[in-house]
Image (cartoon, rainbow, N blue to C red; front, side, top):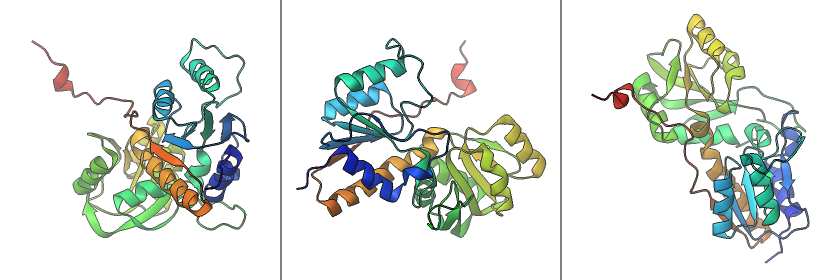
Length: 278
């Protein structure tokens, strides 16, 4: 088996989710660690939390790959009494490499939104907002696709609940009677709502929809479904595991790949009736 170093892992990720695709405001790649350190075991998750880091240590993983970066904005100080500071301190103490694969994976071919679209059963996928990047086709955030057989809106929501593992959604605008074409964006996607409308989609599925965007949908007679940030991005963890598994086999890397067991939706949905007491 070939010895795998952090720099090799970064090069492999760059093949299917080029770091150059990341937005200018983002921070991706190796955020903690050193390029020449050997990698034997990975843990993949969405958020760089202490609980995820502890899970990596329990599983014997020497490298953590998260979707969201542990260092996002420039640091003026590292206060280890805060969750972010404690994460950095523990990762450095335990020599855990931490890599972020964020908006580069969002816009990559077969990226975050593709994983969500595939789970929903959509076909004929194309970017919601195509971008030019090194002559690559199919690159850009969001996806639009269609169902082989249209669904009623209630059945579409049932599929969303099943795929995202959630018990409720916020819906803005006018729900269509029939859903054939769906635009979607895993994670925060208010900025692509108008792209979704102009693409001819019957509905737009994303997360963290702004009040002003929801009101715009209402005025435009368009339907937006907020499926939560966690729910719409969680399928990307399995996608990343599959891609790294194929890469490891191709390269002959002796690499254990784990997906996070400890991560859960960050919000709990509480019904009004559940809070009523005598």
